[in-house]
Image 1 (cartoon, rainbow, N blue to C red):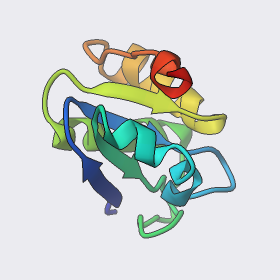
Image 2 (cartoon, rainbow, N blue to C red):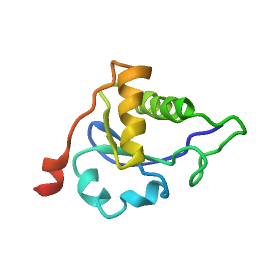
Image 3 (cartoon, rainbow, N blue to C red):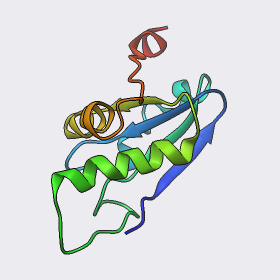
Image 4 (cartoon, one colour):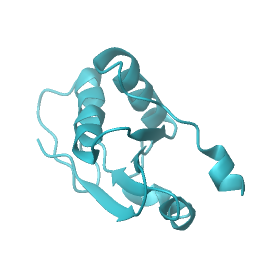
Length: 111
């Protein structure tokens, strides 16, 4: 199974995890602002966009997929999820890899 993501911008790494019925393009309205502050990794969740899937789907695989993209992004990675993507991001941070850091970036969007 492959995890696809689009890498843009410059700065500290930020992994974006979209919700249930979307793909990485869900983030397009906010990408220009985020790219000013971060190297953005907008991922396609399992079975969405350009990411693969397999016959043995479980929620835990979704969480592991987020961890895989975070690990590909490097160290001191910021993580932001929307809707179901937020659940995937939180579970990835809390139970699969507790060393992940969730950073709220709403202020960047409001500035």
